[in-house]
Amino acid sequence: MVSVDNPEYWEHRYKEGSTRWDLKQASPPLVSLLNLPSTPPVGRVAVLGCGRGYDALLFAAHGFEVIGFDFAHSPITDATALAQATGSSAKFLQRDIFGLPVEFPNYFDYVVEHTCFCAIDPDKRSAYVQTVYSILKPRGELIGLFFTHQRPGGPPFGVTVSQIQQYFETNFEILSLLSVTNSVPERLGEEHLGRFRSKTVGA
Ligand SMILES: C[S@@+](CC[C@H](N)C(=O)[O-])C[C@H]1O[C@@H](n2cnc3c(N)ncnc32)[C@H](O)[C@@H]1O
Image 1 (cartoon, rainbow, N blue to C red):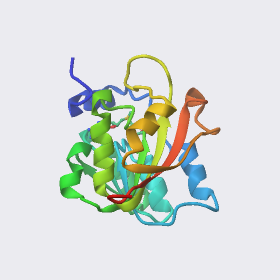
Image 2 (cartoon, protein in one colour; image 1 turned 60 degrees about the vertical axis):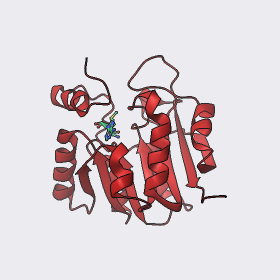
Image 3 (tube, rainbow, N blue to C red; image 1 turned 180 degrees about the vertical axis):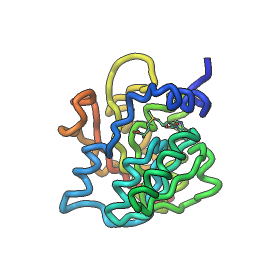
Image 4 (cartoon, helix red, strand yellow; image 1 turned 90 degrees about the vertical axis):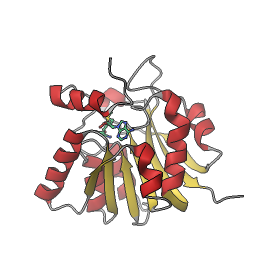
């Protein structure tokens, strides 16, 4: 069987329509975040494992300069077409996220995570943290909506709140990591929204 590390695994799922993760809209907790008085100020955003691009389009609609990344071909094609059809400024690039530190070192003010962390092999989670840290500017922010379900197997691979803290706390200051109340029904009670600030060296 093709592993989740291989874009062919995901391409196959898009082609056969086995895309239960696809909300056909931006994730409600991210929509809410951008409507808060304490909404993050605009800046450059990377959306990792962006799929068909709904979250990227959301941030672009709020004035952020956004690039969505996905290593599967179909979702990048679909996201690009959606951006063109809706007049969005969001851009989309077909890339493996683990290669981004070479191309985009210290480039982004924000990284947006939504159902990418749960899609990668859990053995690559430390590499994911290093990737996010490397592409953010110093004191840049990870806005992460984590799928904290506790069922075995995956994808989606579940994670606990304390595991998230353990993975990120060396490189990031955990500003908040809270359960959200407006998830889509099939994820209700199983999502946590984190805002983590990248630590500067020696901080
Ligand atoms: C569960 S889907 C979620 C897609 C999107 N975030 C959404 O909510 O609709 C996971 C996505 O991550 C992408 N992906 C997984 N591993 C990746 C990697 N190493 N680099 C880039 N994209 C990756 C897959 O191709 C897939 O589109």
